[in-house]
Image (cartoon, rainbow, N blue to C red):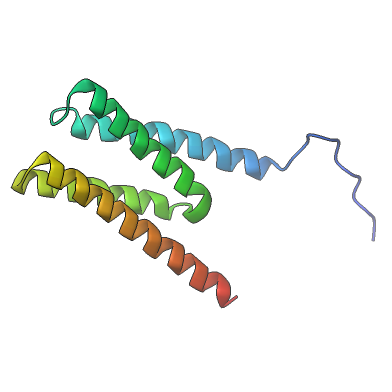
Length: 118
């Protein structure tokens, strides 16, 4: 069996680069989509802040729960849109945050349980 040569310093796996690129793309796309959803309900400054926060949450969660971060984001947007039609902006925002947190935590628990049984 032949040993693989050592990689030069600073050289890493291409798979890591792909995960980082996907996280950046998801961050930008989720922030843009969030802005399109909340722009009519909030002033420009808070709409940008909420959009940036949502984008960062999805991008950072991507490293922990991968594609399930998208499921949490979709659940949050759906909760926001539904509650916004029925109630106030504040209630819609809180329901979106709660939906994102619950789905993200459930996804992390699901992955942890799956890894534990391997």
